Length: 103
Image 1 (cartoon, rainbow, N blue to C red):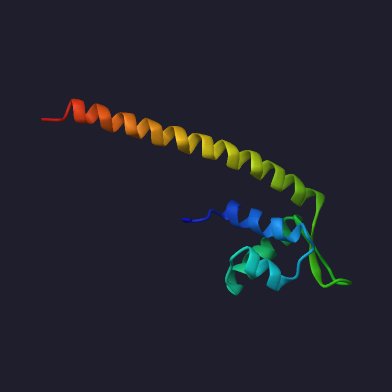
Image 2 (cartoon, helix red, strand yellow):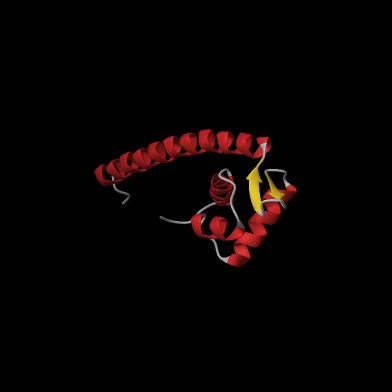
C-alpha cells in the first residue's frame, strides 16, 4: 500500500468512528501516529463529520460524516476506474514508442 491522500485518511477515521470509537481505537485501526490522529480528529470535528460523546467518551459519526463516506466511496470507485484507464493508456503509448522510436 502506498501513500494515502487526505481524503483516504479522513475516510479511514470516519469508518472507525462509525462504530463509536475511542481515540486509541481510531489511531490503531486508521493506522495513524498520535500526532496525525490529533490533527485529523480536530479536522473532522471542526467539519462536523464526527461528534465527541462525553457520556460514553467516544467519537460518533454524524449524518454529515455518513454523507462524506458515501461521497468518498463514489469518488474512490471513479478514481480507481480512471487510474486503471490511465495505466492502460500509458501501456499503449509505450507500445507505440517501441514501434516508432525517436531518432
